[in-house]
Amino acid sequence: MFSGASNFVEGVDKAFVFIFAVSFFFIIAITAFMIYVVIRYKRKKDDKPQQFRGSVKLELLWTIVPLILVILMFYYGYMGFTPMRNVPDDAMEIDAIGRMWEWEFVYENGKSSRDLVIPVNRPVKLNLISEDVNHSLFIPAFRVKEDVVPGYDNYMWFTPYYIGEYEILCTEYCGMLHSAMTAETRVLDSAEFNTWYADLSQQKEEAKPEGFEIAKSNGCFACHSRDGSKLVGSSFKGLYGSEKVVITDGEERTITVDEAYLKNSILYPDQDVVKGFSKGLMQSYEDVIPEEDIDKIVEYLKTMD
Image 1: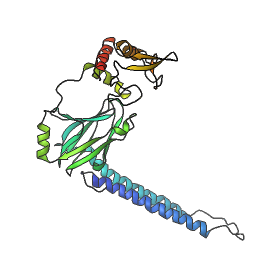
Image 2: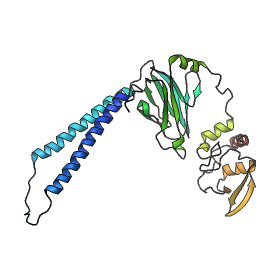
Image 3: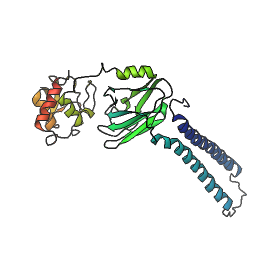
Image 4: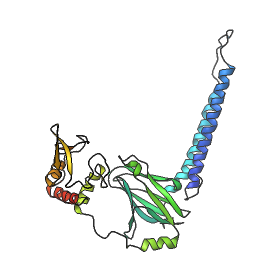
């Protein structure tokens, strides 16, 4: 807190501190008053009931004071938020793409990175894009967070003040590996950033297999991992040619995963369910994916060693 890592830290922290201070004061004051009333006005045998009438002064007090406090909270919050929507004309634009469960940052020269690499003391605008479900990009040290929603043009901007590394989180629950959807913001000095930005030697020149793109666009990687980890369905890693125990009509049998099994699993997923996984979680793609595209997916899965 109060790190000043970006131009928005001061405004956000002012609003936070004010709201926290007001809340802290009143929780202490109200608790102390309740304890005092319980002790001071505890029931006695000789007490006689009394009739009390309303107090205009008290009613005005507990109406006007909270109103003033709420207006002040709104003021500090508004003053911290308004600059976040006013992007400088000289801001460097980067596409921030969210997908289950990773971030990708694409620069104007075509370079892409899993981490956000930016120069210090330069305004940066992130165009927020989702390829599947709702995400939310949050950089705690910079005090910026915006939703990343499919089909909705959203953005965030900030100016980093200090060289260093800062974590990026997804704060919108987006599935099983939501908590692992992290990245880093690497803030470099101008010379180091320019060198990194101009170096395209590590970029992947070859295009992703067509089967990969078809599988991604149909949400296959939301339930099937590519690294061997267990999700909703079997991992694609090493799937082709492996032996699996499946449940068919309530009975177990061992099969070798071949082209026929893969195609049948895409078209009729509940027919042969791998043991250890649940039935009814995957829809049939019989009328969704054309036959030639299914063949391309199968060819891609053959390469997943």
